[in-house]
Length: 432
Image 1 (cartoon, rainbow, N blue to C red):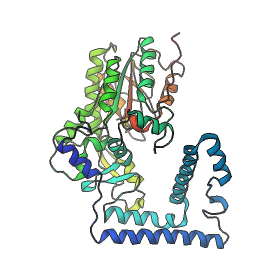
Image 2: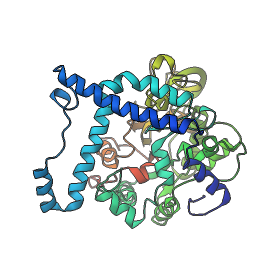
Image 3: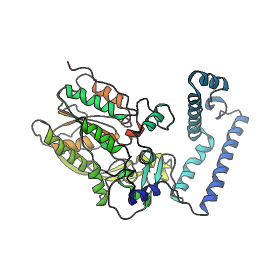
């Protein structure tokens, strides 16, 4: 697997494209003037509201809360300069977020301005990047790929002391994962981790506008070290990257265009590959009858939502998909939350995606596709945005009877969580 430190021509080309924003000679000064006018107008709106006695960001219900000089001095004496600086940074971040959400100017201008930036200037926002031919990408994926090696001591220390945008009490994922693997092994339960690579790392050509697709995916420099440490400890790892990258090279679109998640085709092929590994290594019980049916489904794309455009004028909002709903055992619609099966999938939104919701047929999500390829039930514990919170997942497993009758636990998570998530270790209770 390629590393950002490998220094190949193709990777240098990709990273150069990710790191630059191209603006025409006319657009650059126009944007500068426009942003200055917006800043001045915002201040004017808030001051005018104050004179009229209305709540604004400076007074009333929406008043911004910055630490006082006395509080900062006390914090400096007790915990040092870094703690005081962190308090200022946190207050500044909250102020920016409040301005984005609550200021009168932002409310009036956000949607039309973002629409102009996206459609005319091909510019996203703090959460969404626009690629070639209107492909949307998640900013956190960019941070993961272009950031420092997530296992480097300096990077771990920066996250612990809050000098990084993604602070964590326990940023190293390896001890937490090894602890859970040992706890499951003590119960005679297998453990397979499935890190889902970033859309940007797999489909980077769609971001930089490169028409030729060949070679390897792009990843964080610590990824191979992370995999090696787990394998040396005997943890079973299923890496979907070769499958998804192969699909991208063949133009099979393993990820959705306007969404951060893998496509139904990507889900299906990864589920097929994972099922082969599970069937070859674990005793999963007798086969049962599962079948699928193709259906059309319009998904409201998450990255399009994050752009903040007017929903009625958002050209990226709806992703038209062909999904495969799963029924079984027998003829009943399959539900990945029924609590049955020797296989338990613990995941995040990549696992939940296309779970049954007001439509006929069973689930079409990752658990359902694994069940179809295995021809055996698969149970699932998953929540959106829970992939970066390891301790929360272990809490699910600690609930009564959640591990009863299990042969193997699949631990799926978005790969960016390796660098951006909190991996505070939590152990299962001793067997019995």
